[in-house]
Length: 262
Image 1 (spheres, rainbow, N blue to C red):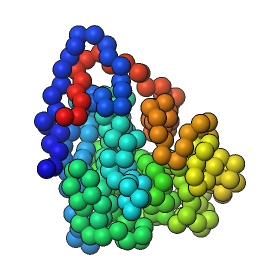
Image 2 (image 1 turned 45 degrees about the horizontal axis):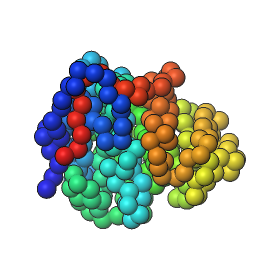
Image 3 (image 1 turned 45 degrees about the vertical axis):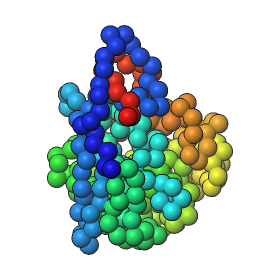
Image 4 (image 1 turned 180 degrees about the vertical axis):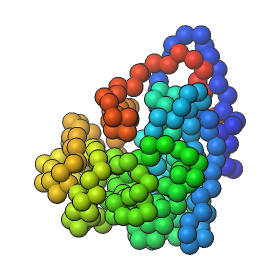
């Protein structure tokens, strides 16, 4: 059964509540479908601020679907739960081709990051067509490979303001892709966990030296999957700071209506 965001029940206790892993703050949420240039239908969700303007838009690209990555990977789910209300940031999440989640299954099959170029292009174009401003690519693990390979190339390069990378493994993305981003010149924030399974801060600093505008952020204690509320919250702070262009520390409490997953 496809989850319907309209079914969420929001309750205001009249007192501030702690923002926890399953806390869902108010937003305008809708299930969406994105059509790729090769005719596939990708399923996703768009979460917009319930009130006020959209200050920035995240187009999120999830971890490797063959290893459990999908649009609901926890940092992205928490981004959709919190960022529209706490920072005025719209969050677009979707399943790349062949990927399944409670939202549904996207058309096609996994293509090792090659056919997924069309998924990236379609998702960004969807955000453009919806008039969503200040668009940023946000990639996590496999998603960073898609950002690095396709974000600095037209048409995406003309439609986004920059990128945020979480746990880049630099497996599929090579030095030529980093050089393309260097020439592109738009900003990039690179969040590298201290205990990453694939690329740790010292090695990442060496590889990303090819991108002069990249801002490296080593995160002490964190692991590749950002397990633990402390690390997920840090990732969201850094994402918000990057796309809004000012330091952000998201509040840990919320005064107003909240919901939790049924």
